[in-house]
Image (cartoon, rainbow, N blue to C red; front, side, top):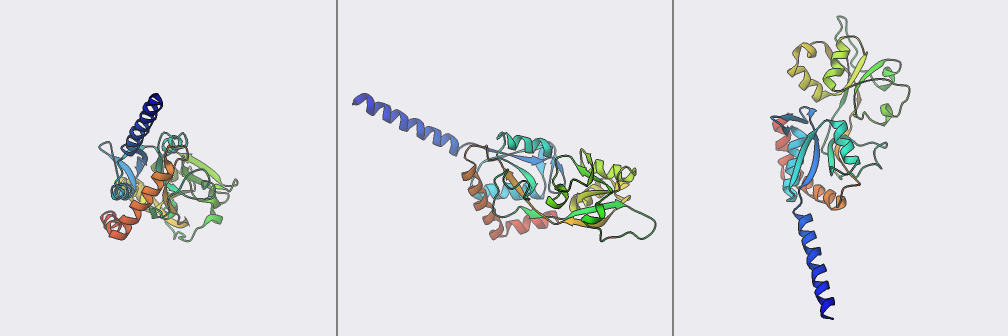
Length: 249
């Protein structure tokens, strides 16, 4: 009897220690490293509007989080493997819906612009999905553009390592249009005025919500998602979200 009591106490002690370790564990979330102004890297650290929102939400939830800057495609692979708890910023659509675990409220909403070369004559500004068929379309490796475009096998995609690379291809005449989120395009134009002078917004593909895509393979992911939901709700209701938005506007 004494041995059993001793073993029971030992088991309970180990469980308590394990619970404490989980409670104090730092959650690792991937942050895209080349998507200013939402999420990029400065001096080796993630910066941007989405980065500030994510940090504020975890802080409001009282959770210790490490944001790991990575190229988006690599970030998503690490989420698939359960190495990272999540990655942002991900466009949630029916293709990805069952693959990841999602939080309730989006991080933000943004427009995917259709960009073409600046021409001497007047340029259309009302292009849509149908206008892209039969054209060479510049896209970025690992990015999602909504189910209507991503699910259309007839689209002629030219895949580049970054949005900036896609714009350079556009200016060189190697693609007809490129798909880039409008605030990202504006950021590129400011940082690279030689490139920015050569392209213009000529339509909108879609205006999706963006999320952290949480890994179904990461231990304790249901608890983690619940904590993030609670934190993001606090950030929105307290006015902190609006203050962050104003800083990055």
